[in-house]
Image: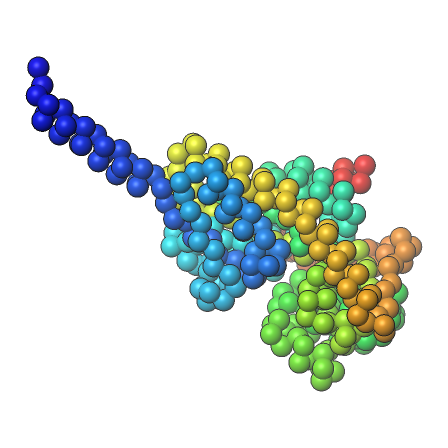
Length: 338
């Protein structure tokens, strides 16, 4: 029979082992993004963090824009396994994953809120085809979500490519976006975000594109007061995990992450619609000079026809797999509208 002292020693050993096991299983995961905590990426990340921490002993540390260097630096750190999660838009990942630039091709995504939800929750391109591609680059794709419909703000109105001719439109530094506005009839100029406001003030550019929430937040409507809803795109972003990190998790933790991503996706799909409405209402209230135009289906048809050259440029870069993705995105768009 074991003595009382021996039992106490055994109990202490089991207790210590249990505590050590709990410490090993409770990790602090790092999550980096391109925006601030109150922006759509930050709101998604915060909801994701809440879900993880409410349903496990793990914790999430969020690094907002600029915390760990530029976008390219953050992606390198994620691929190297120094960071576990990253949120980055196709405009930046396109250099690494050419197929991701399919989200920059005009008129392959919906703009109606219910259609947007169906497209991103049920679409085969978003929920199946991109996963394999991201995997090839050491990334587990967790969610793709929109941050709002792209709205073109200019100093003068336009409803046709001819009226857009000669206007200098700022785009992100993406050849595909430059191609888009060339096709639309404008004279695009690629500039970093930090130079946009100065360029508008000095007439270096005549306009730009962004979701309504960004237009209102940075007073872009004051500098280019004509808002034109062309219906050509959503500003889209993707949340990913390092694939080696993800593969090394228990099935329980993998399910934990998937559930958190699903909850955050549902949350942000509704919230972005609200934020767009609030942003537009604030613009109407604070800017008496603002002009808001929405192109008719007939007017959009002209731009849709011109966008075919952008599709061709994308396929030339992304190859047959890019073409297959684009075809599926169009099919998903049709299904969402149906």
